[in-house]
Length: 115
Length: 113
Image (cartoon, rainbow over all chains, first blue to last red; front, side):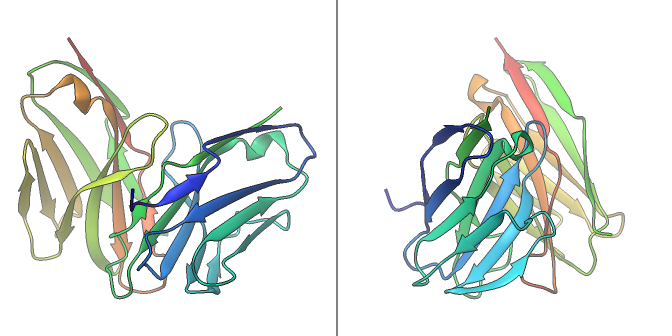
């Protein structure tokens, strides 16, 4: 499977715990995006990487959220001290250099449930 | 503020029937518009992309239209199948910025046997 891969697919955690999600983009794609999607809503932008550089962050990305893409390949999204409001689907997408913005390929997402 | 509004919010149709989903946007400056299909619990998958100069584009049983003057797009599904049951999301891209994708909330389509 050469698509965008996200792990884990599901995560249940207790409030206050830290969680980390991983995204492996399509190998030749240098752009990587993180989105959050709550039930009945469209995805909301969280952050964007071009290679290893984090070029844009949404105001949704509070201090408890941090994302990295250390070698310009896979990326991780960490949420510290999780809250119930963090429960959502976290989607990762990638696109190649020069692609029009909407040519993003999405992963299956990681569904987070904070109890 | 860039916005994408979709209607209806949800729709139930009988298998074999046609339906049309609407998307109105206020994204500027407009670059292109893409329709995604999202199955429950899965990531969105692109169906078609519309650029400023394109009015109609078909992909199998899916036909998308774009009116750049009125800033409206539609997605028409013909001869619906049970597998068409999903959320259909309209995504509009602006010309400037890195992550200038504005997502609609989607239309939840249920095709009933």
